[in-house]
Image (cartoon, rainbow, N blue to C red):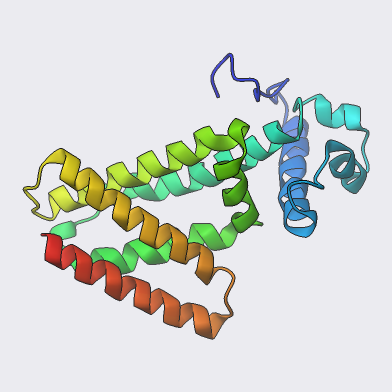
Length: 206
């Protein structure tokens, strides 16, 4: 977050105990978001669930949106690790199908790991205070996928690569959110279909 961001944490953790408390607040917030939804999520409820005072929550975060911002930011950080790793993947060896297979598996893992990913994503899109996270997510994934197309041999112009990257993002992001809500058997079938769609599209674009 920037210095003037209204969702800036009140205090940065200086000790392991403080970091542990922040992690607890984020974990409980994500779980409560899944249970009660965005509208009924409050700092009072978060504090009660943790067995601490509301003032203790406010010591680190000014409001519930600041906590949700931190939850979303952590999710994006996990995703960024994968996006950065893709830069070192041997795409000549993987090819289109190999890239799609590895990309979908690793990204889907991040979606599965995030508690309440669906309401979190919805909040990032609809809540003005969190919209920056949604935009950052889109920009980072689109840039990565456009770069992959370039490395796979595409000679298309930058604006066209951006369009292709956005289409790949929108399809995969939407279906990742579907898959995490499905049972194992149905999710596996949907993932297979997603990989087929992305591979076929990329082959046609390169």
